[in-house]
Amino acid sequence: MKTNMNKSFFFKTLLLSVFVFGCKTKNKTEQVVTIKNTLSVPRTFETVELNKSDLVLKDGVSFTNLSVKDLTTNTIVVSQFVDNNQDGEMDTLLFQPEVGANSESRFELVVLDKKQNTEVIDYCYSRFVPERTDDYAWENDKVGFRTFGPVAQKMVEDGVKGGTLSSGIDAWLKKVDYPIINKWYEKATAGTGSYHEDTGEGLDNFHVGVSRGVGGIAVKQDTTFYVSRNFTNWKTITTGPIRTSFVLEYANWDANGKTITEKKHISLDYGNNLSKFEIEISGTETFYAGLTLHKNEGKPSENIKNGWISYWEPHFGSELGMAIVVPNNQLKSSELFVTPLKDQSNLFAEIKVANNKSVYYAGFAWEESKQFKNKQAWEAYLNTFSLKLNNPLLVSLK
Image (cartoon, rainbow, N blue to C red; front, side, top):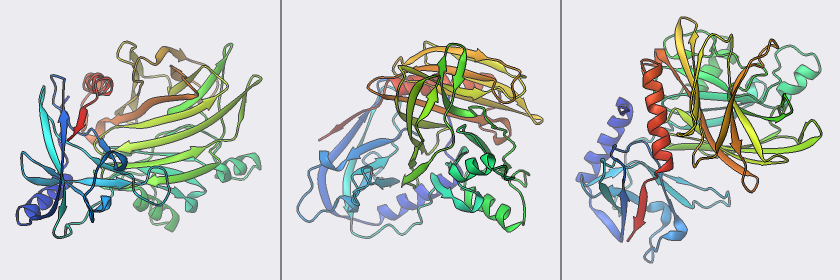
């Protein structure tokens, strides 16, 4: 399914393009990046990562002064530096190429003779939110999410009103492409409005409770699903025009006598409806990532071969689709778990664990955002998303 680039991003890219036409490069690094697409579908909104350690820079050229030039259009594309290992120095350069079906695109790493004079917007944004108890929230141009910290847990345990006891993933339903997290929290804490009401940008009317929400995990023993409590620690890795990423840690938890350790490295890239969950987990050979069934009024679907499960449901006069996508044939099975217990009915994906690690993607589509018109369009997106995950772009550096 083809997804159109939003207007604000296009305008920013246009400004960068106009600027570079009137600007010469000061230093050529003589390093050309070739991106090859082996699929018969065009590739957009996929992030290429270039590691500093893989580059050979000329004397006097700093890694963080590099820009990425599209050699076909002779324009600078939007890029982002990331300090992945958090040692205080940037080690990765991100950009999103556009590559046609069964073709390749070439890019050059250059240093401009002037700094780019355009504002770069952090479309991909996340932060800890102490003013709203202790949420952690994240978003991009398509979707928003949040989950809950230890203060919210203790409030519930102490019987204090306003707490939340859940390791489920909450969905914030956006219908604008610009960032809304700070704006929505500010009006809530200032008493000037509520993010539970739609004033034109969307709202949070998604109930998570103790369910898995959109991608929370569980471990099954016999016929019972066991879950962690709220996250205990957090660390923001990056925010920017292309990616936000962060780490959530959880206290060890019990699954009927098995001690489970859990750590999540979550990232969300520009143009994507699904967050990437890189899980570090021990104490189990498989785990289950879940989608809440809410009132059990929706329609579950799956494609085990392509590695996804989905739940499409009516949602306050609109419709909402949720999904989990598991790459590399690591989706073992699915289970529709229905119970009369409040918020505990979920559609589960059983995911394999290898060397205490696993990867899956989880996200949603809201009909009112106009991104997908129906269940069929959503599932077509999931099939294409899975196809691309399992056939990554081929990156070579010369």
